[in-house]
Image (cartoon, rainbow, N blue to C red; front, side, top):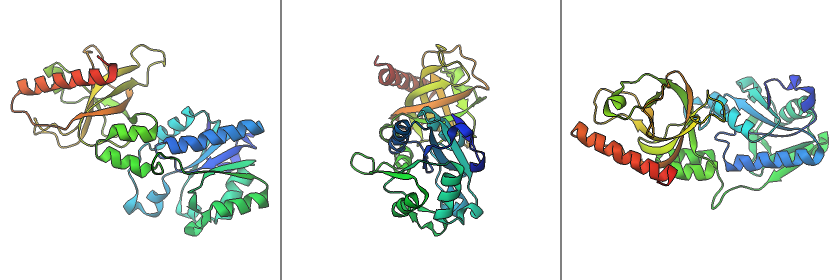
Length: 318
């Protein structure tokens, strides 16, 4: 997938194209349906499929006081979009000046002049783009007729209600990672670098990989989870690339000297891994239990053992 940031520098091989636009936070199943429709329309026209998104999130620029915590910001979002199989990703810098473009000027400068679109795919809820939040699907149809491109509108996607990024955030705040995964179409992922911790897990017989405080992605509610630990620096076919893990989130209530939320993962039945400095992904599959305070190390070790058994059952069926 080709990634670029200026419509005027669109690679020749990606113009003309079929395109869509949006924030795509989480790249959930609703987004995926739009991207599938883009690819289908592109194949029908023998053209490339292109996605247009923004950096930073528009709300962060226009209303920073109510900007959402992003499910999959920056590089994580771009990677998820790439995995859908589109041909190009145009990431526009969103500024207050850019926000002053009228809906027509935005469509003309980015999609007509920049991308030479043959078709634009959007969801039926697309609205609020352009200065004054005036752009909507009806205007897109008018602009398509004026500038010579098709407009393909998809109905809302969802089982009982429209899938949305805000729904996913709500589930993650409540530790409902399984419900978040239903909307995402995959486990929720947090990306980070393994750093040195206090090494208490190693002393207890369960060495953990601590993610840096600058990890990317929404950290779910405090608790213990079953999930997968993926070592992104290893080749895709490496046997130790994706491993089952017990994941702890939060302040360890048994010890009183931690002041920041920690995400740490114990790879099941492995004490031989040297992970410091690696870029890793932690995928949350299922909630196991809330954080608890234990009166003794023996009680803590026994509880961790039960957690590991439960994670093994959830992930491996054992």
